[in-house]
Structures are given as C-alpha cells and as structure tokens.
Image (tube, rainbow, N blue to C red; front, side, top):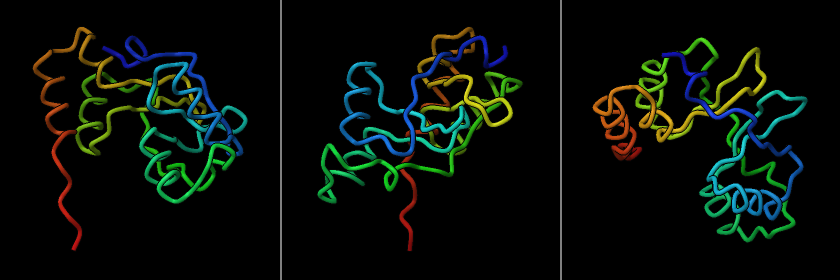
Length: 141
C-alpha cells in the first residue's frame, strides 16, 4: 500500500515568522501536536507542542515570540512513492510519530502512527513500529 492512500492531505502550515501564540492556537483548533513550517510551499521545518514548551516557555518566551528559534529543521520525510511498510520502518528507525510526505520538497501530506495503525497494514506491524518509536533513547555521554 502506498503512503498517499493513508496520509492526511491539505495540511495547515505556518511560516518561519509565526508567533508561539499563533502556532499554539492552531494546534488547539486543529487538535494536533505538530505544525509544518513552510515557505513557498517548501517544507523547512516542524514545530511540536513539546518544542513550544521545552524550547519556548521554559526559556521565558511568550505568545508573541517568533517560532524561528524553536523549530526542528532537520526533518525526516517520506515521498509519494513511500510504501506504508517503508514509512513504518523510517518512523521506527528515527523514533518519530509523524512523517511529512513531500514531493520535490513541497509538503503534500502528513502520516501519523495512528494513520498507519488504522490502515490496511498489519496491526502487528503498527504495534512493532510504536514499540520501536517508544524505546527511550540512550543517554549521551
């Protein structure tokens, strides 16, 4: 099964200059934990609810602070040719719960672990992916 069959399309995005407050409200209204950051439809990063707390609030940022310093720019992505099985492998390998899908650098969708779990893919495979993603990272020395 191809990833385009299970991904969410028409993803809401923000830009590099969006404020913490704008992003937080967007997450609340959409009931999501991640917002892609795009410029000219090109994916340049992601911001998560955790980023807002750990990189933002804990560093005394407020609702008017731009998200530019908080976003993750080294984003792991899939393409429209990625299979569901490949997406699960990527998400397991990198311990990520969401995988942006791009076509020539442009964001065309997002797939979550939940999308994979409810697809026609094996529940056993989705469970294995969740198990791999949920393994704590080894501490750095």
